[in-house]
Amino acid sequence: MLIIASVGMHDIETKTRKVILTGADIIRFNFSRRSPEDNVNFVQTAKGIINNLNSNAKVLIDMPISKIRLGDFDVKTFAVRENEEFICKSASYSPDCNEFIPIDAYKIGEKVRPNQTITIGDGEIAVQVVEILNNETFRIKILNNGIIPYMKAFNIEPDSNEKMIDTYKILFEKIKIIEPNYLAFSYLGVEKNNAIKNILKKEIKFADTKFIIKIDDKTGVENAKKIMEDRFYDMVLLDRGELGVNLPFEKLGIIQKQIIQLSKEYNKPLLISTQILESTINNFIPSRSEIQALTDIILEDVKGIVLCRETGYNTRPAYTISIAKKIISAAEEYKKNIK
Image (cartoon, rainbow, N blue to C red; front, side):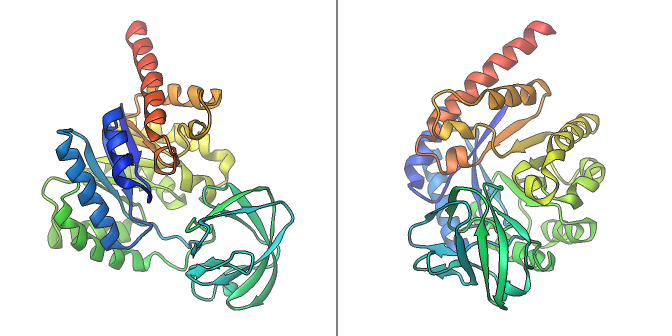
């Protein structure tokens, strides 16, 4: 089973070295954050480390998704408590979230409605819209205790995916010099993905790069069979983080089962991401539900797992990978014995 480890925005050299030495097969870079130039520099740094370590680790570039995000703020993480109220405002930066929480979107006050419940990130925090103050500002009430990190997704419907094709084209040009081993992007629908494929076939060609298509919303789930049939895509990535906020979360387990079955029917390698072993960020032993869920994924012959916050934000990413390898080893040994 492939272990794909995300590398976050801080201490990139040390973390890249740690996850490689612990046994990550692929290093993932999320291009949804930072400037394209910074991201390219980070990937080149990682490739240099891979070469210096004489490692076989590969590089995966995860293309941006069409999401509205929070802006930046100095403290980077902002603690909130249930029933507290704050002002949200269209802005890319705020010096103090107590003054206002920045949302990096134009006229955000026109995109929300009173009493609307909105989640942040992968659903760790939920807020309710209390009052629209103007087309750029509104008041929210916090619905649960927790932490709001900067630049996290603010989960409301984006205006359109139309701009994503132009965004992809610009980024394809910039990352071609990196020659990534894997390139992942979202399924946006037949028409839009045909346009993206035409760019990659005719305009900006990657010689040895494998393409991974992400199922992360209703469109991807509804077109899962077409995705599996399409030989242009070398792998499919089931993005549970996005699915958990884009669709009713109670259906996520059923959707995962269905996608796993389709991947077997069409012999399409499947990757599964998000909250694989997130409890290991703080815990010595992972949660029992994570152990069971990862074991089931392995027994279902899924091709690989994508560790996100577990390695991207974790101060001890190597520990999470070592735990993953233990569970994978135990499950694969069991598979041998029952055959």
